Image (cartoon, rainbow, N blue to C red):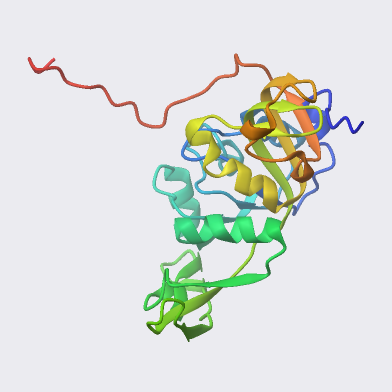
Length: 259
């Protein structure tokens, strides 16, 4: 039997070096692998290239790595909740590859599926395809590095010719992932919104490290309920259900009397 469990988050991330690329799960603050992020932060790893839907907030999620200038480059689809992200990007301290959300999801999935690239309609006729999106500023308001133009071709899968832009898959050195439940073989179950990007990040990492709230024995998870098979998972750490979970924006309903 293959037992993929590790004793702690610190030991599971101990070989991540400076300059590594990481695919990190989470959608907003839902499903952030905080125990693993904290462990990477404690190690003092620097110059990281991170692929994640967003970069947390100023004091939570990937924001704690960003605040201490541990991140060299972000590949994301949304960056609007983090003021420090904005400051570092506009000052030229941080490189950003802004990617449409569905395209980012497919780039991760393709990387984990052995697909080198794919064509999509998303981004055709914009700077996503034509190039020129700022990736790094020079600190004085000018663009130091801009995105390149991408290959655009015409296809007619439904009989109607349309233009599609070529997008390359993403494979990273490591993946950091949060799951609700997992067994010792690495089979995983995710909960609700945490399922959005965590399985895709897991697929894209050459070494996939997972924190689970509940660790069970092989066979205790019904095969029909497995969201991600253990073939993608290399290390698994149990962190328990009592870990802190934050809400990005709390919304309170108003009753009929305006309260």
